[in-house]
Image 1 (cartoon, helix red, strand yellow):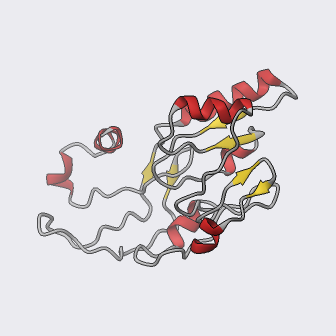
Image 2: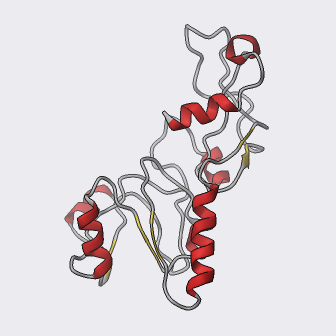
Length: 186
């Protein structure tokens, strides 16, 4: 609901009834984004409830609702100096990691686990074992270049250690998790 409310705030006066196509880019990063490289005409058709068929958003901009989260990570890194900063990011869809990686010694992506389990991983009482359920894009240009109807067609993000954030990627204390689960989806 939060993202719907954020989108409504960016609609021009008059709302969708008067302006037609109100589709805007979905921002997967921590800063404002303008879809300069998006397709002129979207691959997705219109809805019977809309009086247009192009859901394109080329040239449209969207603000981010999580800029303060990124600033908190940067401020924490500045205050911690050489000490490692562990960032836990709750996500339900792919995100662009490049902006956050520069300030984080480790990035945890807890998807539906309890806070206690997360704390056990952070303190070393339990070993991470989760795998990514979807690709994490290298950047927003990658997002715009992918096809809406083709799975696994984007360049996943690669971190400074050379790890590629593709489907079924995960790290444990020994490095990249290589088990039957990952092999099934690679």
